[in-house]
Each structure stands twice: as C-alpha cells, then as structure tokens.
Image: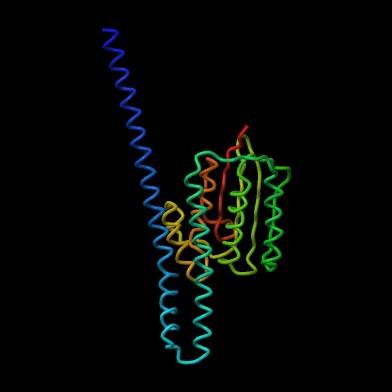
Length: 252
C-alpha cells in the first residue's frame, strides 16, 4: 500500500510539474504573440510613409522643389520615429526576457530630482512641485527606473498644455515606496482608466501619431514596474489630468 501511495504521489508531482511547465510555455507564447503584434502594428505606419515618399522621389514626381524638400523632411521624421520605436521595442523585449532584476542601491529621490530639473529646462512654463522629504534609498534597476521617469515626464511634455501644473511626490510607508506623478492636462478618456494596459497602448498609439512618439510609453512604464514586482495604476489626477500611481516593494 505504501509503495502504491508513493508511486501515485510521484505521478502527481510529475503531472503537476508538466502542467506548470505547459502553463509557463503558454504564457511565454502569448507574450511573444502580443509583442510581435505590437511590433507589426507600430512599424506599419512609418514604413508605409517611407515607402510612399521614397517611390515619389525616385520617380521624380514632386511638382516643385518645395514639395521635394517637404518630402525629405517627412522621410527624416519617420526614420527618426522608427529609430525611437525600434529602441522601445528592444527595451520591451529585454524587460520581457528578464526573470531577475540586476539590482543596485541608489537614492531614488535624487534620481527623480535630477530628471525633474532636466524637465524644468525642457518645459520651463510648467509649474512643478516636487515633494520628497527624505533620502529614498532603493534597491532596483537604476537604468530601467530612469527610463520610467523619462517616459512619464516626456508624456507630460508632449500631451499637456505648456502652463499646466505638475505635482510629483515620493514617499515610503512600511515595505513599499510610493511614487505619484500628477498633471493638469486633458488626461485620458474616463472609460480607459478601468481597463487593462492593452487599452492604454491603443490610447498611446493614437497620440503618438501627432507627437512622433513610439506609442509604447505606457507599456514600457508598466513593464518596468512589473519587473520590480510593483503596481502600476493610471487614474484621474486631483489636478484634472492624469495621475501615474506607482508602488514598488522595498527589497531587504
């Protein structure tokens, strides 16, 4: 009886192990399909524009020199956009393949303050309030968190009126760090706040066509937070615009 029980227990362990492996492989396949779908969708528009203008220039079908100059400007703009897009796609792929975070200890408050100062130079009309009352040491990927901060501030620069207020606060409580970035811009559609990150990607894409962005900003921010096992939430700001609410667990 004991031998039979041990045999059945071994079979159960093997079956559970195989089921978990199949589930992981299925999740990885789904992530890869989503990534390839995003890449194809984002690359299609600039490639179409580049192909169209290249054909017109090759066939010398531009009516005037001014039209030709504008065509070259559009080519340069779309090539630049593709460069940004490919960099963002590679970053997303890198984050998606990373199972562990290469951590270093740094002052997150100082890192944030440096980028806020850069933002003030780029967008001097924005009144910015920064609230951080203490040294905020954190163990994480400084490179990826730096990119998160850059994307959040770039989002404000691109999508809010130049004189709209910005409030950024960084605090710690218990075993987590709380970063809140709020702006007084137009925010998102109300229906988007309660939906998943894929809906936010679609919203980001619609704005990227006007600003030259990659349309992957929200996805990158979310991926960086997820790789640190944190929570990433978008909601309506007390200023009337968008609030990016990030909570990161403190590793001891």
